[in-house]
Image 1: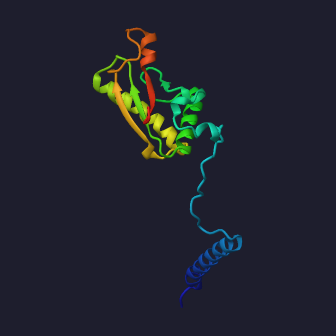
Image 2 (image 1 turned 135 degrees about the vertical axis):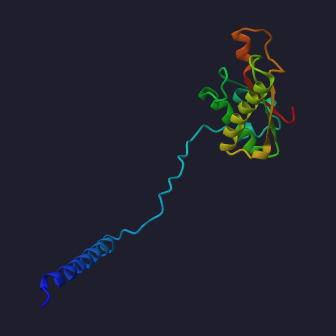
Length: 178
C-alpha cells in the first residue's frame, strides 16, 4: 500500500498554484488595470509677447525700429548658446517672418580671431544654427532661413583685445530685401 502523504502533497501544491494564479488574474480584472502605453507628456507652451500685426506687416524690416532694428546677437567666448537677453529680439524677428511668409533671412555666424580658421568657421555655423533653431521653434518656416558662417574673416571690430573680440562673436540677421 502506498502512503497517502506522497499523493496528496503534489495535488495540494498544484491546487495552491492554480488558486494563486486565479486570484492574481481576478485582482487585475477587478481593478481594471491593463498594461498601457507610456504616458506622453505634451511640451509646455510658453506665451511670449507678440509684435503688433500692423507694425510687422511693413514691406521691409529695415524700416522698422525697436527690436526688429536690432540685428546682432552676441555670444560668450567659445559658446554658441543664445543668451536669454536676446530672446525678445529673436521673437520679434520670428514674428515678422511669420507674418511676412515671402520674406527670407540669412543668419551670418561670426567668431573672434582666436582659434584656427576651421574651428572658427564651425563655431560661427553653430551660432547661426542656434539662432535658426529658436526662430523655427517660434513658428518660422525653415525654408525662410539660411545659415552661413564667416568665422573670423569679417570682423566687426579691429583689435586683439577683449572688447574687440566680444563684438566679433556674433550672428548678424540679414533680410533678403536689404
